[in-house]
Length: 278
Image (cartoon, rainbow, N blue to C red; front, side, top):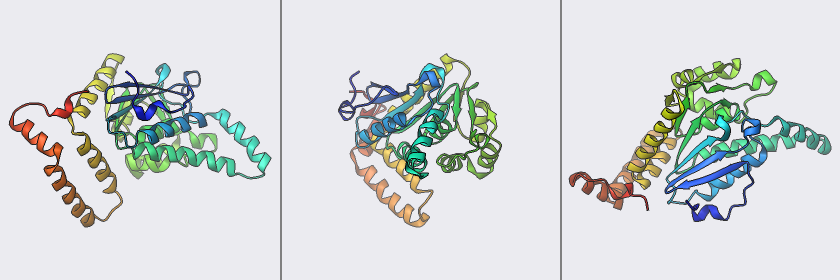
């Protein structure tokens, strides 16, 4: 299907590939020769996509997965060599700072997307790939996917990743995984809270994805967006003020188009109109 108008003007390289099926956008990490390791081009491309769809109400979900049967092996080591030369040329560590912070900005952008973000995790889910998994709304993994935070074993730190990992799984588990740099598979990722569902083969994986998409389509689009923002706000704002604001949003939802349609659909024992694809 043709991409949404918001995406058609983007000038993207081949580090990612986009496909769209109705209201569902598929974003493929497309560097299989390097196990989809993230370089600056890929980070920039992902940022461009999420900036473009920020206000695109026609896109309800973004499915992120990796070409070649692997999700993402982390940052591209080749970029480090390039940055080393740049740092030497300018006599400053600033090139490292800028590159690292750009990756964190991308994670912030994905996490804040109004759409529901789903990741399909196969093969390597390491370093930056682990961080990307942690900013998703729904994570579905193969049982044999390999997870880990290998940074300390390389003499570096998970600088931009750690805050998102901590938010996802809590300090107790984050400390163990980050400090030991251990590898683990899908069932452990499920038990610590990185992923929500495990698939034991490709058929189960695709079935789980399609079921998730159907659930997304059954939820009212604007209600889903407002709910996602509310959940993130609950982590940072005073409770009483948040609940006051949430009550106002609830009233607006009940009296709004979606609330009225949802109520009538329930009474009439039919699906609400937002489940139909245009």
